[in-house]
Length: 307
Image (cartoon, rainbow, N blue to C red; front, side):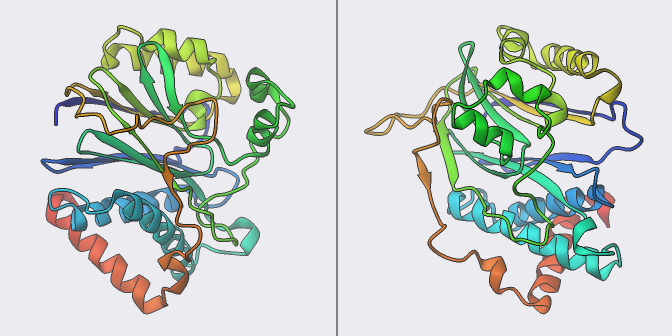
């Protein structure tokens, strides 16, 4: 696989950084994760870090050198991250009551075999950008997104809507999230896969995002866009995190039918596991402790700094 990666987090005007982002790779697979700890809930940064550790540890354990079933991997590991956030925050004594438990959004993308596979919970986004247009974008789990999808407000009105910061789903809350069915798209040379928190996409218009990226190297384009987001957000600027990949491999052979996820409609090329309960619903405390130990072992094996 041939690609370049850009990543950056800025604190904005907040007193502390609750975003987390990371990527892991093998010879044949790449996992990208961005999590936005919820600032209105105590220790959102802890929830975001647990989500990253859970996904990264699972990838290190299962990518040999690829993930056998990308759809099932993302569906299960995001669900497990929710269970581990609940378990660990209770174990560490961070939970005062259900209303203030540590919570986070998450968006994760697995790239292998010339395809990008992704899933998410909350309003951290993934974009696939191609030839100056948005080929695909995740649809936020928010009341505002529901209003946009229903045609009741325009996309441009979202930034100033009074409910813009409300979430319908997250990891670590009292209700288990409905993990989004995995979507995927075949990548072609010069595609950009962009994962980001709402501190980045919220202040920017779609045109600003596209014009800022077209024909530019990510290492120059992204810092400029982050600075623009900071400027437009002003004194209320949130934490900003961006993880972007410039894909540089030729496209793999197309399947019998084109596989894309149009931005204008809900994804159709998805594998929906909703008919079956995710495995985290059946995990005991002992199961979770074992998973945590395995995650730590996998991360230590590949990152001596964590030993």
